[in-house]
Length: 156
Image 1 (cartoon, rainbow, N blue to C red):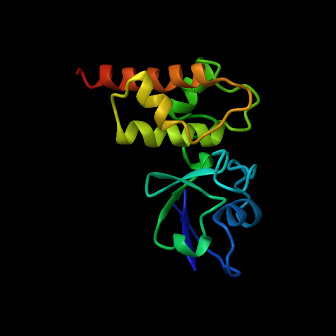
Image 2: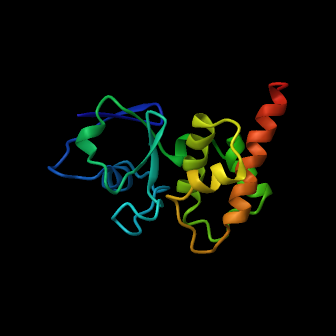
């Protein structure tokens, strides 16, 4: 089958109920999404499927044919970070960094769905992504900062 990951097409043979996370990490060497709980409770494996956040540890790879998959590796580059990646750095929302890829992808999807979120909207929207370091206030500030900059750029 063919998977489209970060705009690139990959032909992969899927072995039964193989998870998307297993394919991303094991076969495509895209290791930003992490296996932590394996039950869809922590969000460390969050990727975007057609722009919607999904837990890659629970998603069957076979169900992803024809779907645009975005991982943290496809969001920005070392030379040109995505605005959310920059905001996480500026607001020091990257303590140990383990949950950061999933947090950033969830935040990108949140702002796509709700461009002008309140603080409560951000807290609710990010609730599926856990941070063991407890950097939640900084994550909320980073997300709200990106939303405010976007709103200012659009003159609204």
